Length: 288
Image 1: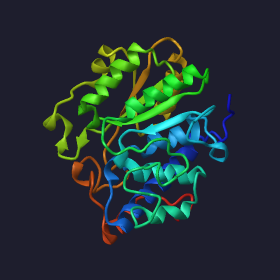
Image 2: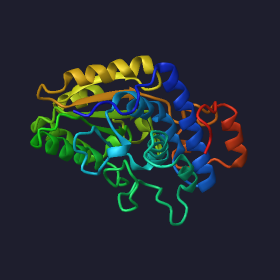
Image 3: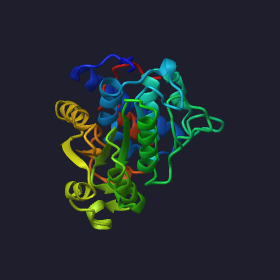
Image 4: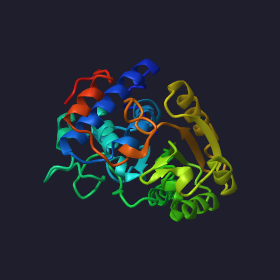
């Protein structure tokens, strides 16, 4: 099995990294004058924990086949800014490239694409609801190859309004993909407003349980809550059932005027707003 190539960061280190990731997100969408900062900000702590502590991966030996490495699939593809930041900050491509988000000819398109050849990206994602199906395929392929690494995927709670999510959930349980950990960024918001006002997905825990999954819950902004949840999820694997971690978050987390509202789902900050946001986020790794 692959050894952990990225040093397991401490909680203090994770906190500092997540602040820089949020700075990256705001600066990227401001420069591009478009993008999706809200959900990227709410999932920043989740993916920081995954890439810098939980997941076994090696940028130096990465291939799209994912053999011998843990695999991450971003199902909510509009969260590309946070995804690109974590890939750059863990060494998949130069951090300086973050400044090219959504620019003509850039590899960093508005949604992740394998056609542009960005290292670390296993699957194009943009149309919501498809990532869990892709993760299921990876999980089954790993079992067929006797590869004991893990498949992770991040879903949005608004994305859980998509029917394909639940088709895939049934498929995973039926085929016993017990090498798969799904995460839900449960921030209560989607592009049109509050989740409860749009489709009312309600309490996700009994829904996932009814579909045959083991379910954990945690605070998606508290590393003292997330890391034990990831650890418990790993211990639950190999027993015939996939695992999902429901992570309570705030859309726009980290910046006061963005937090807790769907207004910034797909709206870029302007220069003045960027400056205000930067004053609230510590620069810890150096801006690109």
